[in-house]
Length: 141
Image (cartoon, rainbow, N blue to C red; front, side, top):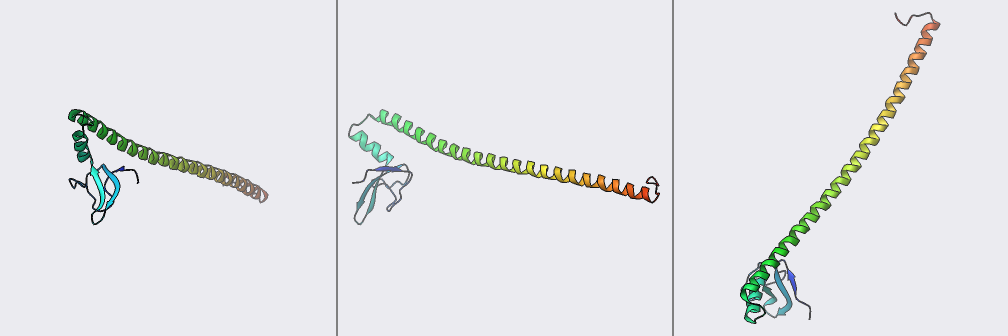
């Protein structure tokens, strides 16, 4: 027999608690199938009612435990969401770092190209000056 497990919501027909027909999770999946009915689920409220009936705990104690469990589940969900957001933020930071590296590389390439063009222009100007002096031209004219 498979162990029961808690689910966020019922996954198999009849998609509800056997006793009260609630579909609200968390809900216990008993992993039991009833022919011509479907999977047997037990909601938190019905489980609490029967725990009280069997004397597993007093009503107020069950209420305190239920509240603590609900708060813990809420905190787990929030933690999961925050971890997902952190993962997304980390990916964004990595992407921005790559973009920054690419931009720096592009700027360095452009600076090198500008330096080459400046050198070529200086050499061309010097050559033009030399040619003008050969023909007796005055560059100031």
